[in-house]
Image (cartoon, rainbow, N blue to C red):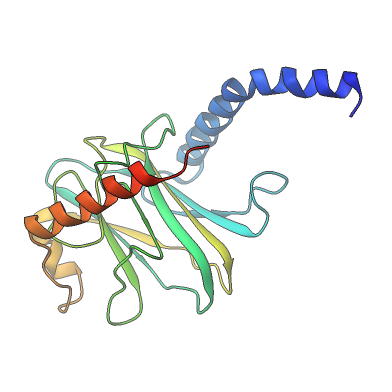
Amino acid sequence: MSATEIGDRLKGMFTLSERWTRLWLEYQQDLLKRIGTNVFELNKFEGMGLQNQHYWTAVFDIDDGEALILETELPDVRRYWNLQLNDPYFNAIEFVYRQTSINGHTAVVDGDGKFRAVVALEDPGVANWLDPGEFKQGTIFGRWMECSSTPVPVLKRVPLADIRKHLPPDTPAFAPANREEVLRARSIGAQLRRRW
């Protein structure tokens, strides 16, 4: 690279946080305006990010005593997939001590082959709980990486007290001791993660 190109790239690096923060906040606000809450949109983000991925995003909206059930088919071939919760400013919600994300390795898939998760302000007693960290609105951001298909999940808003009526009958109960074990493993894994 020439000295001019190196200089331009360094200048761009110093403004990256500001540019990306604005871009994702505006994306989230635009999504809310165009399709509202609790509806997913599939997007490839052409020209940015990894081009072997498809992303699915929704602005979630829940209240006390409510839950969102996320349901999706899973691609037959799925090299990697995940989803995470973001706060209203598109920052990842605390993920070391809270289960705010799930991936294909940590997900519990239901007997019918579908993946279901529950977004709720309190633990609904199921393995695939996504904890919004007291945020009642934010985004759910998922990705299919090198998958054979790109299903678009759906969200259903239900009373938390009725959650079992909306899940398959064979969905196992997840006790507080189970949650403690999963969160302990999660925090240890985060501490062991390479960060350089």
